[in-house]
Length: 135
Image (cartoon, rainbow, N blue to C red; front, side, top):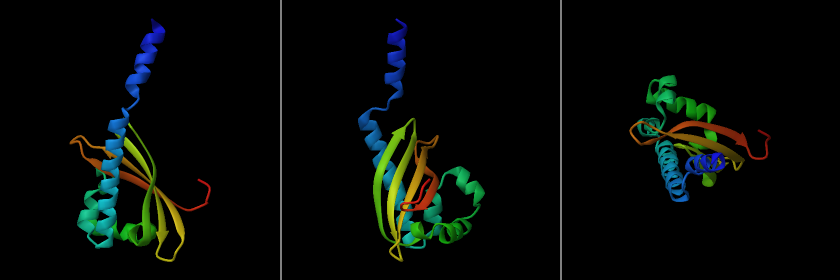
């Protein structure tokens, strides 16, 4: 009996593949929308995709945009921006993005997103490393 309860608890904790696929597609849409906002220098739109915790750190869209321009230049301006591996579980998504920056350098970004109380997905973070660097 205990094994059945554990098995059921395990199965319930695994997201359904269709739901995970939908979550990943939604996350990619959010990331792509923010990437497009950066390319148009639309600080307000780019800021709107950031989670409330990020917005609290950077109280205004122009402050957020300045931070991205200076600390995430490959995200802000690039030659290519391609989605890689993604994982979704419990309303949280991790999405890798392969980036070639404006100078032709390869980068790996790891975006994290989280479902908000209103059901929307917002970007909670982005870690950026030159391709090939150890984490």
